[in-house]
Length: 367
Image 1 (spheres, rainbow, N blue to C red):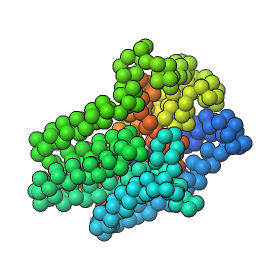
Image 2: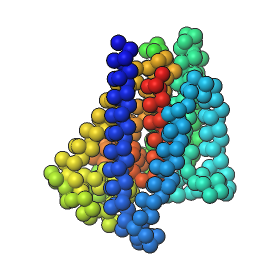
Image 3: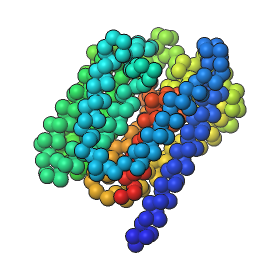
């Protein structure tokens, strides 16, 4: 039985690694073709964004991901509070002169000498490791009240820092991950319902008292009455998806990438994919994501203890929610968000963090 279980774990490992490599390759291929006209016009090189994705995303991601895979998690566990606090410190540095970089109206990039990255992407990992640690500790001792209060304090602390960047989409991902870990740790259902109500009211308040978030919501509910500037991006997304038809215009033949669709290499990249490979290709990509999530859940079920199980649940939730939100927003099933598509969208910090997350996911399965 043990040998059979070990073989199943290894098979799931290799399937996850294979699917991840396929998604990363697809991302590089689409990025190379979509970013070429923008990169050539801005920087004089068609491969500018592709090189940055390799140098700032894949290479550091593979190195750190391998370390995450090899780490003895039970020993490393004691360091997770310090890792999380250090990550909060990096978020605070964003608001200091000479450290935080303002791009597109948001202060999300941190410059430390020659290194530039997004601390909020690393926060997804440090939070999962730390919150899984305290959830396993408190639930093991049946200290449900302490976990409930700790949850509120952590979300409030991160929320304050991320709202003022602003980066509400990343905060939403972290909250979804936190709720899933909280639920998976077998907390009383009453506490889970109470937290759900508190968080829902918090997001409603943020939407109500923020003009651009309220505009996005109203644009989604009634796009015909919205001003052209508010609805432009989503209309261009739908044009791109509709133009793809059943089989697409062909790889590299997108028309929307020539300056018509904003954020074509990041927030809108699924629309570009749909334009080039059509309905068939888009469904195939979605099925690869579904397969990745399915086999990751199967791997998670082979946990050794509550701590490893909660880490894996958090990582799977992170990828699943982020992929769903990106694709759903591109299809106008939910209001538009600035959510990148895992493995595919341009962003070195995001891709490196995702590869590190896979390292921790596979690490859990070794135990």
